[in-house]
Image (tube, rainbow, N blue to C red; front, side, top):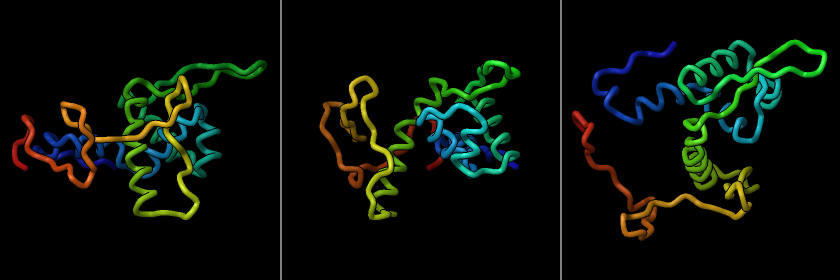
Length: 154
């Protein structure tokens, strides 16, 4: 059960994002969608998630515009639905890469990254970076947060 955001939290971009993405399994489902998995059985097999929890998370991702349902039919089978990333879902790529980078740095396995970000069209390696308006790269540990125009209090 999701709690309602407080008035202060509702102004916080992070709190609003976590209201949708902060439940267990949600980002792992999105990760699998990035890997090309689209079907309920594929998500279930890959993640080992209970069917009722998977159905709940998929419904929430659809309701919030991160995935969309598309009908498909295998030869000789009934029509079913698959789940495909929307533009909003694809826009989560930097979030997943940032979490991956943090996990590799602070929770390493000794095996290295399980996934590497690449440019889809060319396969060229890409990386996340903070850039100033003039294009200068800033190390993540030198980045801070300041009040934005939507902040009620910080």
